[in-house]
Image (cartoon, rainbow, N blue to C red):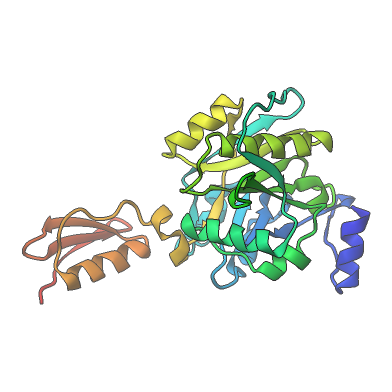
Length: 306
């Protein structure tokens, strides 16, 4: 905590504290390179969390985790925010037991070079994830708060997997306990099985050694393959909710499934823009370009043609 407060003062920042607990910081966030992790439980006022989410940088993906009243936060800005359709899983580190490592062909280690950073971004790109500035990886990342692991093929030296972990206690000055895992990615060309599991286990061991009580992660509700892995490792679902901004990078999460009907070009553009704004669309006659838009109990029928 003292280190984080010193860094804030060195940068001209004044830490906020709870009114009833002078030594507990509030409104805590941490820059993870791909965006900020906002610790919702440290925000005493929903308005403050909404304001913080509005400060999301361009081409970044901010995530508000541990939001106490997500319905209130989203209700304050329904056109800007949405409840992420992901489950939160938790690994209890007090009971976690490391497995005997019998895998061959790759080694899990910490990121240690600019070449590692370049290959991590290549992995992110292959998985459609937000890229991270190599300068952030190399000079702006605080290793006491953020741990970046890579899986390296022993024979080729190629980076075929990566995972990022956040130490919550160190990142928030003690306002939030525990830890979390983010950005788990494995190369589509990886030749050896078990890379994702090895990365999760190694990160769990890092945080367990520090005395962290648990490690959380967020996974899309329909990612059955990943959920099966996490359940195999002993993670359990917890009632934790995440809020994000309605930005293009998150569109697939809040706009709903893509249309299957073949509307004409102009009707498709019209319907897609409506869905981005939270307006539901029902296709009545795809060939004729007829559809219905509904919002707030009102609906209007449209026909768009060439």
